[in-house]
Image 1 (cartoon, rainbow, N blue to C red):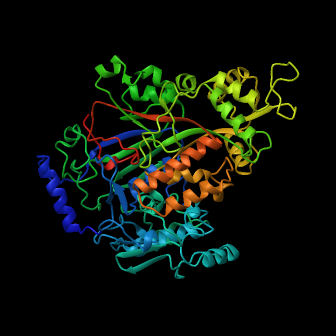
Image 2 (image 1 turned 90 degrees about the vertical axis):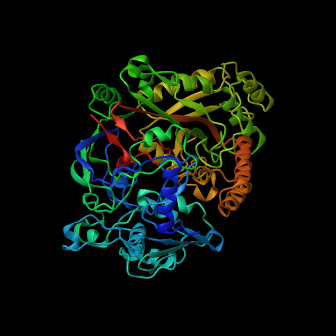
Image 3 (image 1 turned 30 degrees about the vertical axis):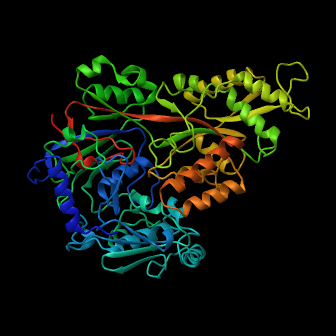
Length: 597
């Protein structure tokens, strides 16, 4: 059901009054203030449809606007409009989305607009989505639409053949019905797509900007012009990014806590509700790749925030609490479980660990039972993780709290299982052979860094204890990733993180149609595929969660994955940082942060 602008404003006013907040006077961003943050990995550029790294996305989210975002305070998370006028109207059993763009939103001034004030309209979102289909742009996000969006197959095939995409050609699945109305239509139900509309890759880019500044690949990595709270002021690649407040930014008031907010949110919002965003005039981003220099910069007061590396948790934390020295300085710890899961996969096509027969399942289960996950959390994750019980993490709707993570470390049970299914040491060398008498060697992929070497040592100790010979295939991550997609690895450890609160993004990694991309385990299980396809046709709710549970039971039964951990996200904030609320799916809301130094 669509929520009108007037109704939204009335609801906001009601929420504010219910919490006894007095709205502060509307004022422009304080250009004397600078928010100083760090990235641990260099950015690639700021074209929403072209990048696929999370750090570039953080910057783009400050410059550009997708249609939706999440309520700053509500937990569990709640979808709210950003540039949209109301929530999406989802019809035709989840196949069609009708979306309204709020009138009166404008792009930041830029020479590409030839001195005219440029309003954001529905056609800008149509054009931006079509950029994902352009083979010259080489967008990572094409997989979301290929074979799914209505009417895309023919124009996409033609563009691939000619090397040119026709932006003016009509595509049934993405159209502007009028100046402010956008319709997106899929071939099959996709209730989860509404959440993708919160992400930077679905932000609006003006066609005039691409035509003015686009490179031969039709990318505008260096010339971001959006409707967001900030604009790019300066950029030294791999070193520093400086943003400044967009003087033409619309009226975007600091939100009031309401339904679903925590008791402490009232203190966070006090004095800010109703104030125009952004609060701080400048954002300065430093690229600091090494963990120790990042912590030192924070301790010296050169950074306002720090995403604490797990490797340094022992320097700063005492378990889940800040050490006294940091508390005495007024530093605050913001801590939550990440929307991610760490796992080890087995290649189900591999002749040694793959397959669906009882003895192959027993081998995978025995390896899982022999691995000391609690030791891994203590020594490899530095205590900054929880044991995983299912593919979807606790912060994502669809997580089933009744599936408590049982203690999985049981070497004696692992040895008994191997004995039962014929994996025995026949030649007396201390290592087991396969049931048909061949040497049994598990080859696990591993990167050549120090953290991986520590993991290798733990794995060897655990496998030696049950008589399984394990060796390591050492390659850099990009090479291993290519080998994994080609089905050339026997076993490897990965993490999967989602930018949206949708369990589908995790369960899709074992869907057989995704072999060669996200399904590294190469699982081919018809029952799992059937359940996954059925879950995609349902909205969030008990029926969908019940299907997820059945898929989890299949993962546990066939063991294509060894579930490992859900990591913690620890953020340190200086005492002069205000108005900050940690959110699992809004990693940066710089427009709502304040600093008082």
